[in-house]
Image 1 (cartoon, rainbow, N blue to C red):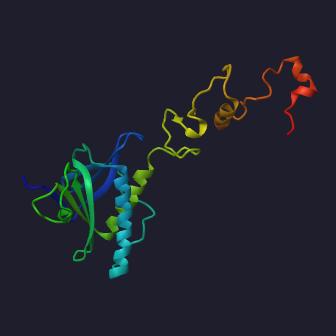
Image 2 (image 1 turned 90 degrees about the vertical axis):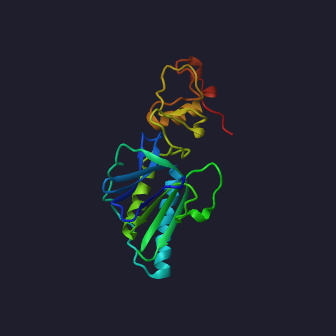
Image 3 (image 1 turned 45 degrees about the vertical axis):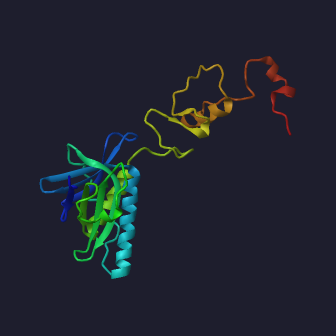
Length: 235
């Protein structure tokens, strides 16, 4: 069976989007023209790489050919979600990027993932042999907008932990900087024993007034009033 190549020469819309909640999102690219809609699923890192490479390609096109390239947009006009239902044609394996000088358009090609190897010369080619593909032609303005929206979509996920930089989960976070204790966990003030250093680190993030004094195990013990034993020794 010959491969299917979905070509969009003048798309009404080509965007990155997600389905699912932060921490469990699935990333898609979706091309739309009139009533025709084609979606493909891919990894977050692939979206980031494509966005970055498009920016680099536009700069190179401007340097080599003097083609006017719009600046990066400060705002995105298209913040709408993906057209639903989102039915992916395939999962993206290889991505291709090119420049069509005749139409002055960035060409994005997304090829379906395959189990075996294939000749990379089929990228941006109409040969019958090779994986299915989606080929989208973007004006320089549309390419800039795609890259800008993609960056926003990527950054809309889970916020990073200020201590270890790993993404935070809504139900809490096992932070390696606090020996694996869950950040933002509700700690009971009736705990009999806990490592004071770890407890203070966690408590300072939620309730700084509730700290454990390592030298005050029992404030009502009369022996603590002895000046000779109440304070820490001086090195």
